[in-house]
Length: 116
Image (cartoon, rainbow, N blue to C red):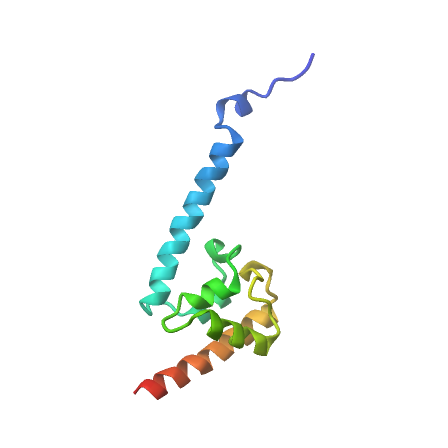
């Protein structure tokens, strides 16, 4: 006699579960982007910690959250590290994360000095 999985019948359909998860990620990512833009947290900290909400986010999208960082600046910055703009944060190696974070610290300091 085939076994009937009653737990599966009681849960939501798979597409609704996926939509709920995508919405949760979208909201968490938007909140993180606002915090980066407001200088409450730095992009280098996010790169080093790699929270769950940024694992599937592109590196360029993370960098663009910072003030005065557009597409061109992101592209030039990543070209120096030979990392694709479309690479996701979750797929970066620890060495790559450390390199980007250290370079971000230097570029942020240069920007602050040039403004002051």
